[in-house]
Image (tube, rainbow, N blue to C red; front, side, top):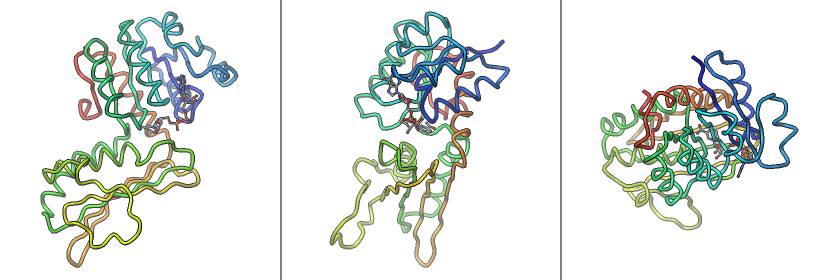
Length: 259
Ligand code: NAD
């Protein structure tokens, strides 16, 4: 049986990739596309119910899972809409504030909701193995993260860099909010031992690079993930949509629940 999906943010970079992959997947039905008004031309090519009002499009796609890659405010709206009408949603938007993340968790009490700042298999496996690396190398190693993205990206650092930072901070028994350094400038002096630098680079059409550095005495390890195309994120989100269609509301699911 195929799973119906409605793509929210369908005119965007991720949205268009999601639409073409969903259309080509025999296990999925592209049941609707939603974006801001003014995007009609880009939505019409998919030949399915379309519009700028998710609630209205969902009336024509009952039981569909919404796949949302839009903006933080819009994603909170998606969570509230699906909570009100019993649908489910996979959200990939990054840059959500603590309040917006809390709103997603609140909506997840009554709606099937999934949120992950990085849907690629590679990054999610990396999140599983990093704690072991941190533990095995020990406290002598300085931990740093760099991320590079295209020049249109709205938020910094990337949601993935934050997630990687939280992962290695947890492994040290630290909190990223307390130990993270997100910008260095001027006479900064020696690097504090209990610090994780999370640095941002922007330019060109880079889909997404992340490196975690372990700087030790006389050596360093660099673990790098490079996304070659947006398809890796879109495939992960569509896999999550299929998985979510068989789940119950009650918690805000993420990639670690699938693996
Ligand atoms: P984009 O700007 O190309 O596309 C966003 C789309 O959402 C646009 O078409 C915009 O019109 C639409 N949108 C915004 N607000 C809306 C609203 N209120 N109602 C309807 N449509 C609305 O951006 P993108 O590169 O596709 O990225 C989108 C988001 O996904 C970003 O937050 C990005 O960081 C994130 N992202 C996540 C992953 C992941 O694996 N989780 C991967 C890549 C990108």
